Length: 457
Image 1 (spheres, rainbow, N blue to C red):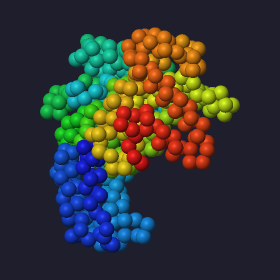
Image 2 (image 1 turned 45 degrees about the vertical axis):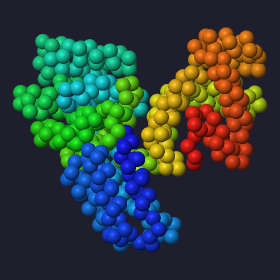
Image 3 (image 1 turned 135 degrees about the vertical axis):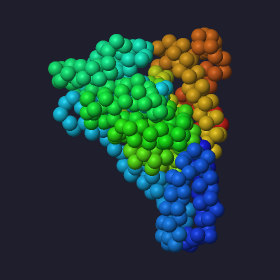
Image 4 (image 1 turned 90 degrees about the horizontal axis):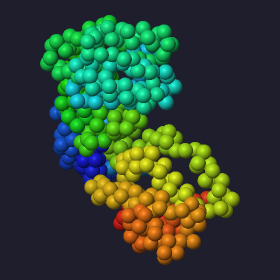
């Protein structure tokens, strides 16, 4: 997300340099570029105008402290305004009601409501430690009811059955009664997709809302529709008292216009971002972190949280003890590291949250990322084709064994040789991590793992 905007703004903000003070003259061209970058990102025009005017008011006449360059001072102002534009801070779900707390999902057809209902159920179960019941009040699509049942089964939450002969209000009320009997904490009510111009469908969801009085009414909208997402959310909010917005398909949105427009146009906070198809791919929306990502500063806090949720701590501790005892870092360990990276969403998810390295062009980084993902899959296939003894001690791998491994993994003999060489480099790096300057050496050494090397830091 935000690749195009990040690339454009990073280039633009580097232009404000070498001045003792920020003035209207020396930021005029930069502001024009910021305006163009936001419009190209499909941010709504009124939002762009207000945003640029606020930056201008704050920046003009600002004395630059000795610890900052004018460019840094300007970026700091832009970052603060981005945070303000998107809502200042993450707004959590209001679940402190008498159980069950009811969450109503609303949105257009095809926005991903049912998938999001499943993701939200998993989020509440795993991160908030809540018991969850999900129910579908979409009586127009039997497939949606079946989809939610499958998701509930996969995630391990309670599913309340419904069918197309029932009324949506009756379904929702029956589900809440069931949740009370079973002492369930949260009920998520999925509804049919509707167009905001469809009066009958809008009346139906109003009736459901009035009957169940949800603590949260979340509007689910496709991020790739840009500023239209914000306009649609406003139309729904005029008919229904929304409490927040969930942006879906964010991983496919290179512009980011929806994220920057929704709060300003609707006055409602973005509460979650849907980052992919998997049931765990739902992230709380943190405006400060997203602002940092837009400006190429990365999102290290989210990266740490992602690592904590996905990394196998037991394996990590076991590996650390093993290396401390001088037993080395074998190919079993190497494969574990590749698999843990995959659990964190792969290189794409990691690089999206890392700071821009030395102003690297995002398109070039994307190409390198794709090549690296392919290379990592190949590495895993090669390691899987080895015997346990070969993984523990690659020194025993002779020429004939390399040929057998290559044949089994669908690769070339030289690919197997390259992997063994890369593993030796990783072994050396692991030993250096605890030494002075070890991490920097490790990062430089990692260059050999990436096609074309790592971007310079």
